[in-house]
Length: 409
Image 1: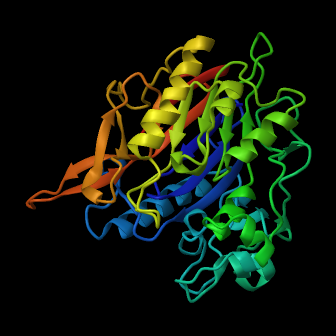
Image 2: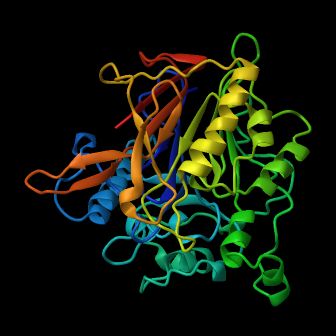
Image 3: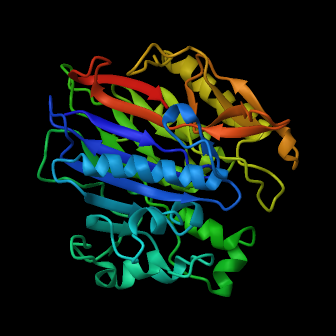
């Protein structure tokens, strides 16, 4: 059965929506939402061509668009309004602070039912300082208090460790595309004690959270040669997590068989996506969720030095040595222009340092994509896009293990 993976534009943050379809079915039978958050100040408006509103500030237009896309997906399931898994990879606000607005109605009750909630670290680590309703803390500690007459959390939320054997999320569907929770081992316990801080003096709280990121893999159905297509979803996992994943991959689950798509860790930061990791998984394309925010270190994540000069340079070397072809990009509605772009920052703290890079043929798919001229104004506005990846489906919508389709809106 095909799987649709949508990397939703949330600016400087993360939000991935996955739906699983039976062959030929118009409606999906299962849906998973992995993270939904955006760094305050890092919101990036979607383009009007994606159906987004042209009015309001960037945050409002972005949030309305994300909410509409998730609504549309969940209401079009075979079991409408029921999410199989809500997964919060780790307690960084740019991975969870939009959930309240997406999931709660005006009465602070659930707008959907959720079968399972998975999270890393404890509920006290999820501090939503800018919200009167601490949605995630309440969701994890007292989900029944959020229930509406029609919707509830069906099972108690589960604190997932980062260690252990790969776990299949849909065990009743063997032999079909599935989602696996991976062993990213070696992560730190949920702790804020002085000893832990002393070991990680640079951004200690964030680094502990990132090390505890839950990492997942979508594995497609075997093709005629028994090879599966894969998608790796790295959240904010760091290089040490990547090293643990390689060490713990005794059965080769993470290795490229047919095609492999990598959602790079930590928004393209220099803290993730080491050369050994790229060489091990040998991806066909890189998906990057990032935005325009400047961090305390006076730098964005996708800078010229860490993204272009290191990550992409290493990846080009890997692609050449492993003879990995350029990905083919199509569109569901019309032929997609061969020119899309990704945005990175020059090595400066100034917002004006952001520039576009033509990524034709590079296989870089960034949610932070370019500038749109603001009509009637002397300024331009940064805009983002949603990337849509189908695996085990051809461009005409037919089910075919090993096929893929990439488009954006």
